[in-house]
Length: 355
Image (cartoon, rainbow, N blue to C red):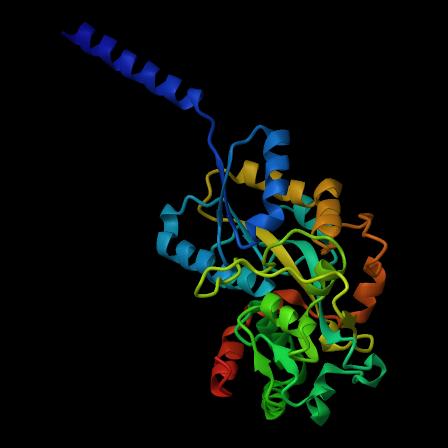
């Protein structure tokens, strides 16, 4: 009887070992980056690494809600976010593990003090304008002076509920003080700006002449002027009630980019980034994926296919974009890790009636 039990145990153990070795674990990525923009990059990684990859796409907010609900049982290994604020929120919730210096050092320009996520690409706040209705030489040197332009009443577009705008307001609140931020938001509302759910419909309205200027990120103009993948840069684009596809905008549309004076908050650099979940049991594979995102190959893809700026030195950008150094010189110096201090910003936006 004892011999039979031993044989049975060995057979079960052998079957278990075969089962473990017969199927490779997969890397699970929660991506706030749109599938249309980054899926081909993920496929490149999968082909090079021979590592099965499963990606869950959604907005930063949707994915963070999922991570909160899943807790220790989350299958996610990597959180790849669109905004610094979302990464900061993940740090606040103690969801991200500390990364090794060998990864953080690859993008030292924007490496956060927390050491729990790494920047992947850079985007810049800008003022987009309609070239047929606006003389850019008359635009203010600072975004803080935009409310003084009474001639733009009812002709300004902004996205108060959108994460990149909220990151900008957070930076404004932290650098200039909450009262200055409150005053700016209230003064802007005196001009009756038009609010949009996301940047794409706002830029469509700008091209159509429905508004004259729009507070946005730099690539929304470049995607019109130069070929770029369709897809929302900050999560899935909301469909209208009829589910119609978004209309493309002609490259000849009268839309261009205005940048404020050097160091102005209106030119603020913001980054996408990624971190490894504390609950991941695939940290080596997750670190390998982050190294891939910071490789020259992936950084070049971001610049040439998505029109975002690389965070790794030496990566080239298309000739129609400002150089990395020129773009960075326009942005104020700001510790991006502080964008995790977002809750007071949301309270402020609710208090002034924008949320």
